[in-house]
Image 1 (cartoon, rainbow, N blue to C red):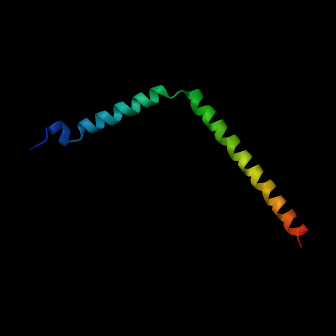
Image 2: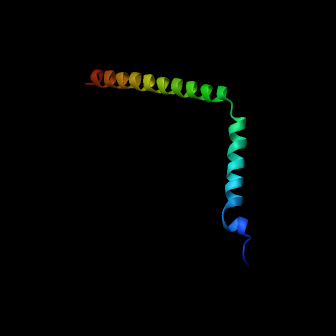
Image 3: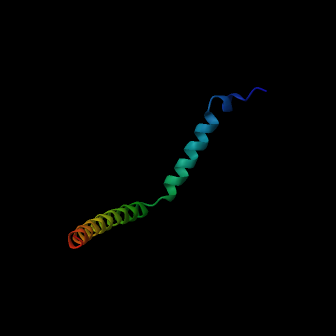
Amino acid sequence: MKLPDAISTGNVFAGTLGGTLMSVLGNVLTADIVKTAILAAVGAIVSFCVSVVLRGLSELYRKSSR
């Protein structure tokens, strides 16, 4: 069975992919992107601070157990 030319050349796939991307981009607000970036930065800072504190506590524990 031979596929129609539109399907075999990828036009349907490209049109579907393009339409999907445009609908997603239209629904993503700039405020959401900014909020996500801020939350990611806060999460990275908190993670770094916790790891520094835990490393210090670990070294303190090792020194006191000797």
